[in-house]
Length: 120
Figure 1 (cartoon, one colour):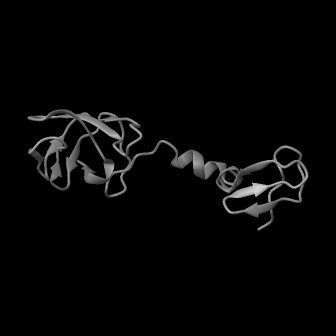
Figure 2 (figure 1 turned 120 degrees about the vertical axis):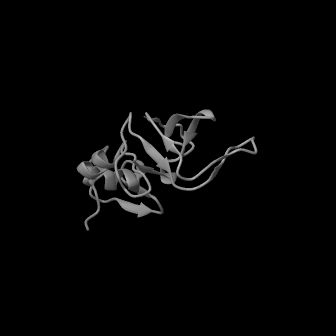
Figure 3 (figure 1 turned 135 degrees about the vertical axis):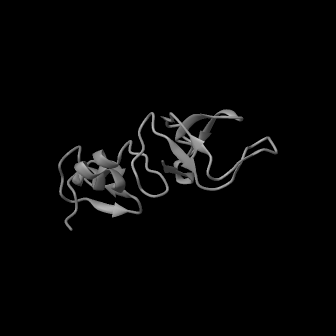
């Protein structure tokens, strides 16, 4: 694998320092992850925004899913039982890992993690 060229000055004399690439000619630093994403743009585009269930099936807005294990509800003594069917989900990016917004009968509106559901 060859070293990438500097994105600012196109110098080929770059070196890697931890997680960064450094150009000694213009002192520009950039992430090694950004370089690997730029080398394979089709892989990053296809993985971006795709939310999958516990079995690897791709989820979409409006799908029906089934909870695969008992989930404790934060701040309550209630539990969403495994096998509970959740209809008409909405995919969201809450930033905390909860990527499904939904309403569960008997509990109301809540967010779920996609790793705890399977597509029905």
